Every structure is written in C-alpha cells, then in structure tokens.
Length: 277
Length: 325
Figure 1 (cartoon, chains in turn cyan, purple):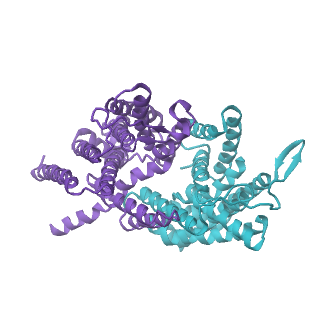
Figure 2: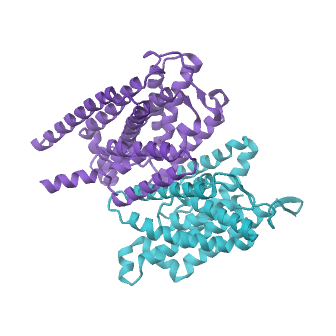
Figure 3: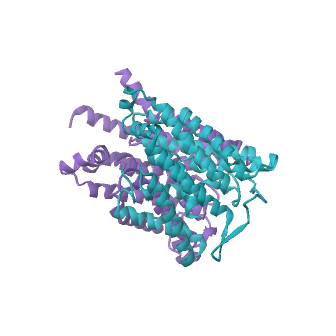
C-alpha cells in the first residue's frame, strides 16, 4: 500500500515538490483518472492494465491545460502567490467534483473482474493482492524513471533551473511556460497511471480523491521538497507506518499514525527527510 | 503620530460603527427567516475569517487547520452543556481558552517550520483532532452531538422561534473580531506581526520577539475562532465532527479573507459579504438537485476571483482611492 501512496505522490512530487506549485486539485486528478478507467472498461471493455496509458495521456492533457489556463496566471500574482495558488486550485477541485457529480452522478462505481482485481499471488507463503503488487512495481518504475528524467535529461535540468530563476532561463532561451506545462502534464500522467491501477480495487465516486490527496501532500512533505527520492522514501515510510498503526489502533485511526510521524519528522528535521528547500 | 494617520484610524472606527448600526436595524425590516439565516452565516464567516486573518494575514503564518479551533469551541460548549449542564456562555469562554492554550502548545514546535511544511503541519494536526473525535464514543463519535432544546432563553442561548438573537450575537462577534483587529493593527503586536511576515530575520535583528509574537497571534486567533465555533453549535444545535472540524472547513474559513484581501482590516468582511450569500443562494436554488451545479458555479467563482484579484477584492477600493487623490 505504501508504494501506491508513493505512486499517487510521485505526480505531486513533480508539481508540488520540484516546481514548488501547490496543487489542491491533485485528488481530483486521481478521481478523474479512475473514472476514465471505469468508462473505458464499461463501454469498451478495455482492461485497466491496457487503458492505463490512455488514462495517463488524458491526464497529461488535463495537467498541461490546467497549468496553461489557471496556474500560469496564479503564479503571476504579485502579492501572496501561495494563497492564490491554493485557492485557484481549490476552486478547480470544487468545480471538478461538481462536474463529476453532474456527469457521473454520486453513485459508487467499481471495475469488476479486471485482470488484476481480486486475485492474489503467493510469495513465499504470503498472499499478496495482485493490484497492489502491480501498483508497487509501477510505482518503483515511475520513481526510477522520474529520477533519471530529472537528473539526466535536458528537460529535467530546465525544470529545476526554471524554478530557481525564471528570469535567467528566459535569457538562455527556455520558455518557462512550456517547461512548466510539460511538468504539469507529466505530473498529471503519473497520477493517471495511479488512478488506472487504483480503479481495479477501489470504489470510484466524486469525492474519492480527497482522502488520498491529503496523504499525498504529507508524503511529499515528509520526504522533503525538491527531492524525487524523498517522495519515494516518504511513500515507503507512510505505507509502513500505516501498516504498523493498523496493528495497534482501530482501522478508522490508521491515518493518525501517518500524521504523527510527519509531525515528528519535521519537528526534528524541518525540511523533511531528504528535502533541499 | 501624524495627523492623517490618526484621522484615517478614526474614520475606520466610525465607518465600522455605522455599518454595525445599519446591520442592526436590517432584520427589523427583513423578516424572511431564510434571508436572516444567510445574514447570520455571513456575519459568522466574517468573524471567523477576521480571526484567521490575524494569524495568517497579519502575521503571515498560513494556517490551513483552523477548523481544529472551531471544532474545539463547538465541542467544548456542546459537551459541557449536554453532559454537565454547564451554560453555553461558560462553555464559550472555556472553549476559547482551551483553543488558545492548544494553539500555543502546538505553536511551540510548529513555528519553527517554514512555508509549506508549516501549512501541512496545520492540516495534519487538525486532521488528527478530527479522527480522534470521530473515534471518541463519549463525545458521540462520528454521529456527533444533538443539543437538546430546552426552550427559548438567553441564559441557555437557545432560541427556537426567532433567529434574531443569533443574528445580534453574530453581529457582536463580527464587530468584536473587527475591533480586535483594528486595535491590534496599531499596537506593538500589530507592527511586530507585519515585520515577522515581511522578513523574520530582519525583524529578529531589530529586537522583535518573533517567536512570541507568532504565539500571541495564534492565541488571539484561536480564541476568537473557538468562540465562533461555540456560537455555531448553539445556532444549528447539532454538530458532527466532519462538518465542524473537516479540512474543507479550514479552507472555507480562510476563503473570505483571501478573496476580500488577506492581511487587511476590511478584507474578511468584504469577502464574507460577497461570498456567503452567493454560496447559500447557489446551494439552495441550483444545488437542490444534488447534481453538483452549485459546486461548479461556486468553484468557478473562486478561481476567477483568485486569478483576477490576487491581492483581494479590497484592491478595487484602494485603487479608486489612489486615483481620486
């Protein structure tokens, strides 16, 4: 489960952690990805495994569009940029939830009988649910890919440079908006992957994103802003803590452990585990 | 102190008194219960947002967990009344003091954190509070508390027949929150807070006690918000954890201040007067279908205002004033 949190958080790590832009609609991105998967399955009988790239592509477009239409202007604000970002994306989140209710209704939906859903695999005598296991593998691949992408490619370097000094990168011919729009698209695509996998074992309804989004923020902050590896580590820690808490406390309190660990970590290390900002 | 400044402060006070006086007579003409209900909520949100503004606007410590204090106020009052028969008036004070104490206890470790780390810590703390109350059977757990109605009385602060008493209390609450802000704006604390917000290092080097000024702002802010929570519990006479302590509520509380003008004296009031009626009207006229159209309208509005007026709607007024000069 921890790596799944990691997978939801990795898209956010890119947007929130690396570009330092707050996205309070992250949970709604996830919700939308789950619906995309659901509809592809219901109407075209495309299994979530195959539709995952489609969901990722859809969310790439959404992410880039949200940046170009909303966030770009929110970042231009001269006064209290942080609050403007928070509330512009919070407003977007409300709109997306409203649209989901309007078009998809508030009913709980699920993707039954997918290739992965409900099946387990036994590893050394321990039964593991396949969707979660697969999600974990995708999460590791996604983090690895993102890490290489940020550290080894021109685009990754452009992204970091743009965050640090948008004025200077403009001088060397980098278009800030293009870089950030791609970054948002990529962040969207990652949460699209997460949504496709989540759809195989989780109910889908308009408010589904909210609870996961909060844990994703905590995961990113726990790992520390500005670090891909941090978000990965944060995801693992969150998963372990949740599993341990579930053993001690009733299931309804399992998130308390995650939150408490976040507080403990930042009280000792105010920049998270591996943060640089 | 130069003449113009003193003059401006006096004008602000007179304006506020005038507005309060006008507001006080409005319900004598507007008898519609539905409209009165909206007015009560508007005043309550104005008060809450004004209180939030003290810590987050003036002192610059963005709290996204103020629902914690609102919930504490609501729960303290409701529990003291239903379990021990303590009058809500005492519950209100108790809730305020408990919240202020908790705000300071939490501020002790939290104020070392910067930026997003601080904001997320406030969310997480409020969320822990929410989960604990949801699992606390004695306090009604997730179902919440039904406050028994024992007839109209000021003593018990319950009124079933008329909304007017609630209206006047909400008006007083909003006026007090405004006045506290007005008064603190020109006090030592007010100057310290703005210095801490703009540049904590510079402020520290000039002898501002950064840490204690944050603590002071947190305590005042939490106290006022908790009183608002106590009021709300009496007003709706039913509370449940997610409606008074949820994360959404923390944002809704901050919204009027942000849209009106964060860190300004009039911003929260302006934001509440515009936002709350729109929220309530869209909810009742197009939200009844349960199909989310009200959410779409409301969300779009927030996005548009946030983008069009990043410094808040109050900017519309000050710009006109400058142009007139």
